[in-house]
Image (cartoon, rainbow, N blue to C red; front, top):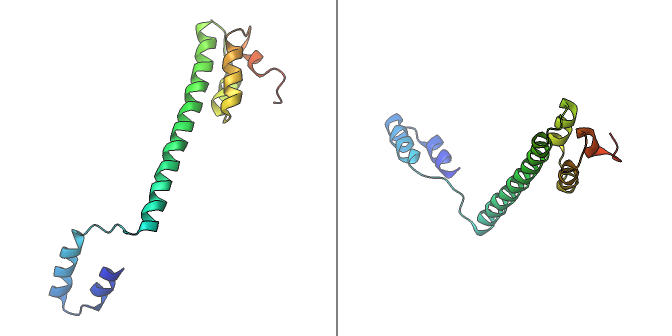
Length: 113
């Protein structure tokens, strides 16, 4: 903000141009303990969310693969339901059921639509 303020106060066009060139090379990362801590926490939270999403995707994919390896046909609506599932515990149950299920629909027995 200070650099922008200085630039807005410069009247001479040549001085303004020199200032702009000088400021282009400056890296404006706000350096303060609190700001750095917030950024760090955000990055960690993002990494954790990424790991969680990866686990969900992997578990959903594995559940569907188990059925396919066993030769069990997987209708599109079952595939979409498994891929859209956001509960790791539910996907764990479905993966276990996939090992013995006679049909893909058996994954979701006793569960509401």
